[in-house]
Length: 241
Image (tube, rainbow, N blue to C red; front, side):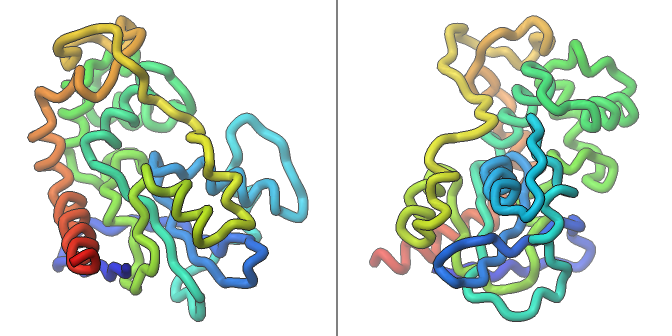
């Protein structure tokens, strides 16, 4: 299936990195980079294929700039972006950056600048308050997924949970990089009940269900993503029928 995004006048647009993925299928594969949507797997692929390898715990986008392309991108055989439920993505961002404190310097600075609160003890509800500010003031991890997209026909809008399967079927030469989740933040919850008002530094383990009381608020913030996903699923349903 394909998906071509359309944008309303004044809708927030991100200045997002675009890449041509190295592969042995002989195809020009355009990839739109979206944080928290399996982007680490794509970065590791490009880092391993780069002419000059630089081993780091967190692959740096500057080390894979040989694969980067600036719009307009010209010819390509396929185009890819990965999407996921916006509530699950918001929870993953909070857990990864505020609870696990992985690669969090930029978002911590942004959170503190925007809210005036200490990110160390930020609750999920505090994080949601942060998300309700204009997207232009937020860290890129908090930008809507749709905002990263180019106004092109995407041949593979891939739901994140289907990424491993799609890569195996369509791009087997690079599929091994996508078989296991990298930078995974979801866990089996040992705690029952609501954690929305528990400080991040008091949370040891959680799942999205522990934050579901504010799902509707998150979905309202990311209404453009919900609309995008609805359009993609509508096309998929039509193909099945």
